[in-house]
Amino acid sequence: MDNWEFGRMVRRWRDRVAPETVGIPAGRRRRATGLRREELAGLAGISADYLTRLEQGRSTAPSAQVVEALAQALRLSDPERDLLFRLAGHTTPGPDVVPSRVTPSVQRLLDRLSYTPVVVYDATWTLVLANAPFDAVMGETSSWRGIERNAIWRNLLGPGNRVVHTAQEQADHEARLVADLRLTASRYPADRTLRRLVAELTAQSPRFAELWDADGPPPLPDPSKQKVVDHPAVGRITLDCDTLFVVGDDLRISVYTAEPGTEDADRLALAVVLGTQSLVE
Image 1: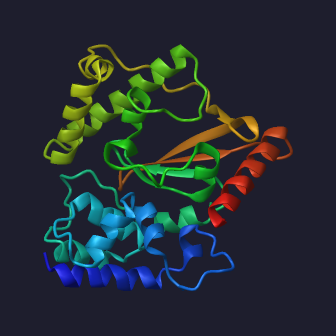
Image 2: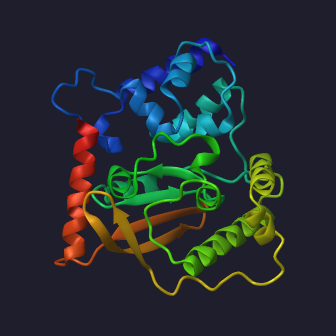
């Protein structure tokens, strides 16, 4: 890895990203025109200290996952992304690796939903990005690191989320996630990161091991798109959750909305305002 050049390019690209373009309110006291170091670190799911060491050339072996996360957070073009991978000593991920790239066309779609809670996962159900309204409604995601960013781990071993499930709904949800991961593993048998994820989940969770080895078919798709979110400030909000699959890029995009003119719509709007205001402060 070219220690100095990698960090220099990350810093240059960080300086050119306007906060508003990535869903970060600029605020009144802001001096820098680009992203602060801690803001980029949060968007990429790494620590600010690690980003500092990368920019200063003191950390010399960023993983391909970290490079991809930085490329996404910096809104790099395809040639710039390829350059960042080369500077880090990696080849650009090929078709045998689970993609986590949000293409410019998909990003434009997400930008049009900047006031709507949206979260994007790759085919392993690992968080790619969550916008500010999603964090406001579901809880902050920028501090998640490593396997904490995986929805299967969070449902089976982690703290979960604010969605309210009955015991049966939770069990069915877990089974669907694991069944989908099994399909992903069949499509990307050479992906070493995916194999490590499966091994780690198997070692840590007897429930995952049971579901992974299950012979029966997974539960049918959730008959109801509605999710009840227990928000700490505004109470319970009933939301419609539509998950869109980007076939060519193998992404899952979940969009949360409420019917206009309802109390749930009012609670959703209040939750977003409260959450995004706290981000500015």
